[in-house]
Length: 140
Image (cartoon, rainbow, N blue to C red; front, side, top):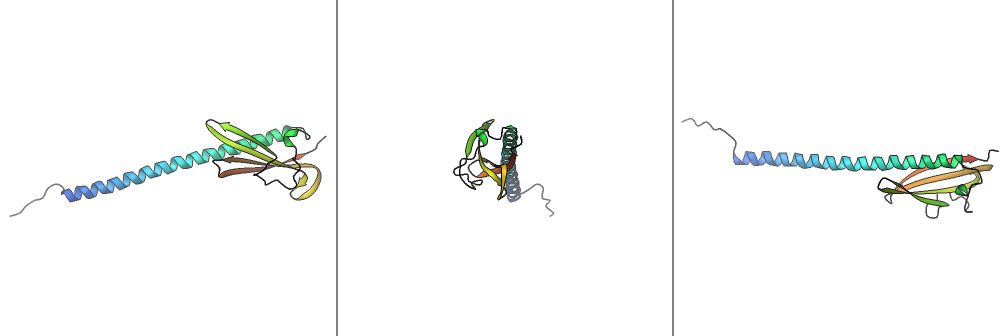
């Protein structure tokens, strides 16, 4: 007697469903990871825009403006614990901390009269940082 078997067994269906479930979980994790990377990229782009806006503002200010005055520390350009100046900027629902340090008469570790070096830091999520350095001359 020849028996023709049609359809799938219960074991085959369970194996197929298990493989499908693993694929769905993997795809869902990819989606979550992509969303997190997208948010991080947006935060980085926002931080960069903030830094460049502050740089533009500093370039437009008078050389003696208090916004770009050194607090008296020597060589403190990299100091984010006690910056010369600090502000909080909010874009949409997210807050960024903007700090900047000013060094008078210093240009890349060399003494130059009439030059301000301004280092801008934009921090977010307590662990990410964007940095930009601006040179401001005392042009009459």
